[in-house]
Length: 260
Image (cartoon, rainbow, N blue to C red; front, side):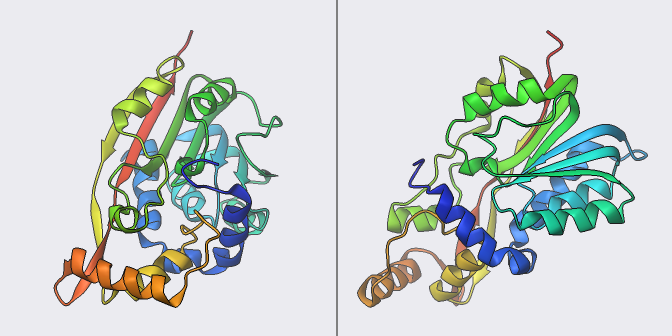
């Protein structure tokens, strides 16, 4: 368990929401586009011989990345096996025939490709248990001078929920991420933003969280009394006009693999 995370629960809930995920995960969708832009820049399409995507989900980042770059081969991984069909469709649409999907927990998987020139992950790394060990694993996958780029979330993410329910992931600062990666990677681009989504009511916030699968922190059942208490406290603590707001705190990192 990590910050209350149960990976089997994550798999189950994301699998149920995968087909409608992109309609509701507006922040994660915008993060996909921003991360792809940071990797590829504003010039002509860069070309990568081999790409590994971690946490491919519904294919939003796959689409954003392959719309901006060329790739010889594409390997995708996700905890949810159903992700494969979504990503395969995007990859084939972009004319890449060399595609491989690796289902399962990336932290436990030993059959990853070696010497890719780009490994990337959008809005996934907050679910991992042991980030220092994961950076070491990525150092064995990414070739020297290759890129490891990712987006995740910072300490202010969903602060409204954590302050009322006391369930939260182990979020890190950019400085902490850089330090964990520093034995193997050098930072090229790092930045963060804070974004707030407005909702008409706390009930809408709960539906939004459920539809994006990010409520996979606990199996606890919500009684009517608990639900009523949460709604009342949320409305009183986080008003926004006639409704309420929810905070997201995206972090973006593009690291380059050290040559030695």
